[in-house]
Length: 127
Image (cartoon, rainbow, N blue to C red; front, side, top):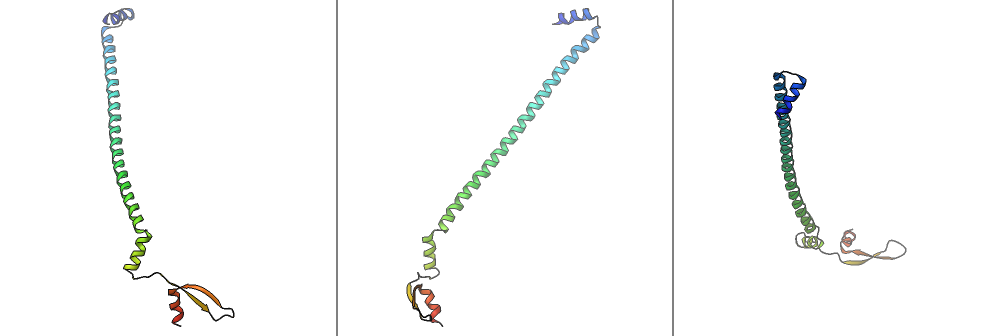
């Protein structure tokens, strides 16, 4: 390789100092480009690790929220169960199922019979 540079130097008839300067600038530019590529590569690796960390955190949050959502769905199904509501109404509140009775409306000219729940009779009997 030195012979190529020496032959060029003879053809161009440049000074040896210029030739050394060219060699040094070539080596320095090569080192600079390698360093620049290394810095860009390391920067991209750091960004990739950061994004992976954030992705892992978001996956954990998503899993936690999905578990909470499943728990809330089960609670909602339990709380909206009609058998449970009926049992609570009977036991805790003392409610009873209405009994159907026949009520005659005597105020009109035509007698009308209708089926009315038991609790509706209490309103009429108090008058």
